Image (cartoon, rainbow, N blue to C red; front, side, top):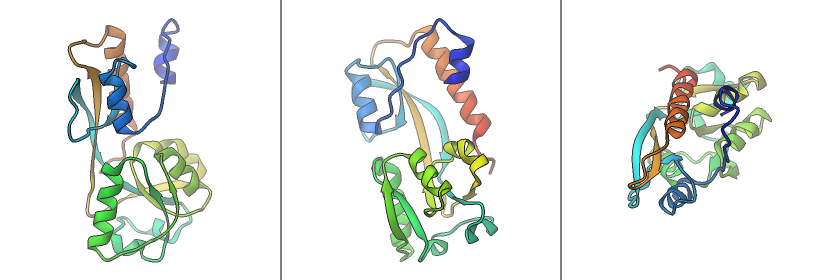
Length: 189
């Protein structure tokens, strides 16, 4: 966002952060020009376009014992302080299912709605989390590291636009800038 705005000082942007269902609802009602979210099961009233597909990762403090592993599995989370996500049931439900199927119950000490907050708590040494990989770049200087999580849990983000209202040229430029940024910061597999 910052890079996009610096290159286009005349453009004004209002940025809001909400769960996927709210984002899609706001796009449907025309409250916003575009949204970025996980794709809900049904999303009438909007057009969607794939933004990026990735997988969840395990984030932890660099000095955590799990940081010595190259891949994190559910059994590694047994008896580990865990930061859970509560908002987007699409991703937390998948994490819960994988842990349940493995018979693992981490110590879910803290729950939060946003990945950024989960990363901040990891940076403070409050535990580990299984979360989207993109926010990790903002915490690399705070000694937060990520490792692939297996079994892999796919995560796909979409761009949403109001049905029948094509995005403006500036909105398309913004979408392209976001796509390029995410590809640049995505961890390699």
